[in-house]
Image (cartoon, rainbow, N blue to C red):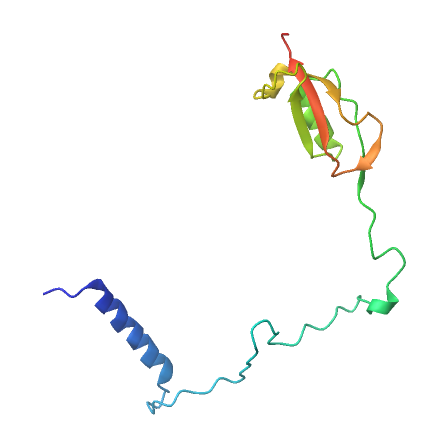
Length: 144
């Protein structure tokens, strides 16, 4: 009669346990780990790594190193471009937070960007903004 699968799994686990406990000399006395660390939940179990050579103490930070200025990008003029080209131009300028909308107000989705022409942008061309600024591009179907 075939034994259930769980019997085979339990037997295999028991063999692994015994192998882990028995010493090479067969004494049955497992070696104690080289180091043991116990800690309450949430407490660290090891010392933090040493600081990098270039790091500073909290009280000796260089001026301006605390908050780095955000990266800035210059907004290009994309009005009149095919919508796909407008998106590519914005991304080439480092602006990736782009939204799009149907300029007719009908709420259509711009599925095939090459069939739409950009008619407006929410941030004026030439402005210098943080590169993570969200910019909305409005577009109309090219044949409308």
